[in-house]
Image (cartoon, rainbow, N blue to C red; front, side, top):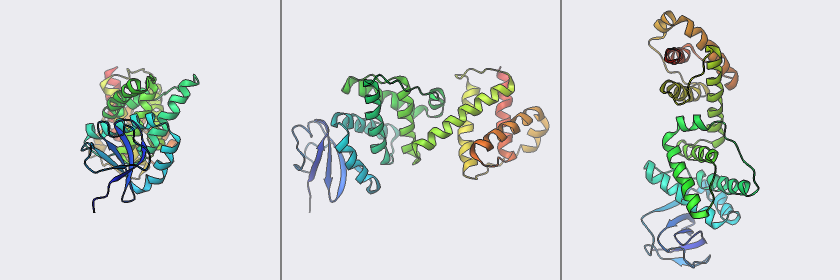
Length: 278
């Protein structure tokens, strides 16, 4: 039986939240939402683009609640950002982004209206760690400016980036932010130990930032990446290895996890390159 989509909420003339077979869908189509009221039916194929997104059952109740509390025009542009991200990345994002990002953008706009500026101290690290997601988030803030006439600050590009990345890897945004914060703290500690100040835009800085991000994930999840050069690294870069051990103690305190020598040796190699570049 071919069941039509029932409108739950028309977000804009081109975006509609609907229900079919007890599932919730976001439908995209030129003029699809024009004049549509809750409860009206949309026949499958009528004005619906090939693009539609099903909200996972685990997030369905939260999303239905969100569409009651967030302005339709904000939800519409959020869904356009998510749709753009999925098209650009060629993958489906975890459904929690429909709730989390809508809520975040709504509050970001309210903060701006109240004149509250939120600083993002991890912006450079976020841009370095997640360049593809950052590029999508930049485009997303342009959508917001064009559709809502709201110019979000650059700090918000970073926060939107974290929502996109977290939805890619099915990780809580707070966890992604935690790792990003620790990476920044570790980089500051390394430069303090070395007595240098490295350009955040340099290749060596970027490589070490990226390595640390995935090292934190390994350490936190008790995974070991063996280094066959461990012996030679300890022998040939003994001074840098001692610095690396201090860095690993710092990481160990942050994560409450032991850091193995294999991980220390990889960090040592990056520290060695960082020193040579200065």
